[in-house]
Image (cartoon, rainbow, N blue to C red; front, side, top):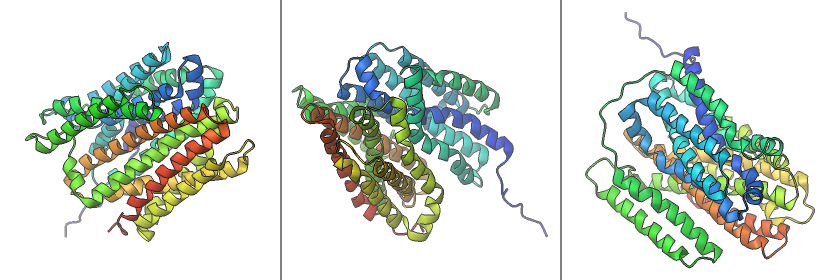
Length: 459
């Protein structure tokens, strides 16, 4: 009788070392999605810019992350995973160094976009490298290990950023990437498998030319229209709509492999998950922009103190994330995500009732509740989409969902920045922040609708 080899039950140390090399780079990219948040007030003062202008430091990064993600598969086929990884990390480091050298808000926004173009490739290429090294039997277990620090980093990043801003200056929230990134590059040169380029599909340059400026024009148009300023805001908005409309038409009619597979939206289950991911991304990144500002402008705290005040939310995420899979298996995706959204709403309510002397303990507890909700919603919502698409469509689905999350975060950050800017000019800080958090609460409530349309069970 011939014995059948059994699948390995533990992760090989060599595989874990490989994962450690690539996670180091992806961790920096993930951290940079929120490190700027505690520095907004400092940047506004030192670069003589308004809040709507400074929010573009975050928005340009998130948009760049979103638009470059679809390039990852084509780039890996064209040049090989190792070259793409090292090239992306090098671009991210160049962008980081230039951000620290910026002398005005325009330069900083431009360099942040450059940083995002490099950072956006790191996570999808990480997944490709680890999937090829681990194989189908171990990739699930390996990804569960490596994605936890990446998922938690946007929450804990503001603490590091606050320390750097208060001790060394705002430039160091970008400079700190350089020595760490150089170590990651050296390790990648030694440890990453070379990988051979192979012939692949040609790049859909038309989509890139339409999507990137289309998204940027849409976000900018919404900001200007909401601010009630430049009458050209409607023109920007219309231009963005035209470009994104042309992008959708091109993708749906092209005979070649499109940049994004929008046909997936024809599946109801995927559309529900995509809308939910968009709104949850808006709820995460939008509130992460406003909360540190409240503690600095409303309570007079330093950048480090504001970063520390975000830690309770990180604790909530960390507490629930390891058990999310088990909870969805037992109670179903719909139930877990719906309760998670309600937790986000409940955790936001006290911030809509701010007074001159808020109850600190209540706000800390509210942030823990928000974190529990965030940890219970994002991954199950995205995972639900994979239940309704074929295995061959999972990479394309993951790309679309990530873009939905980043674009949702970009729009929410921009909108909340405009609302806060307008209200601060017309009302005392506690009232202005309460009204801004009310907008964040409404965004979270919208996420309840797609949550209730998710499948009950995962199988």
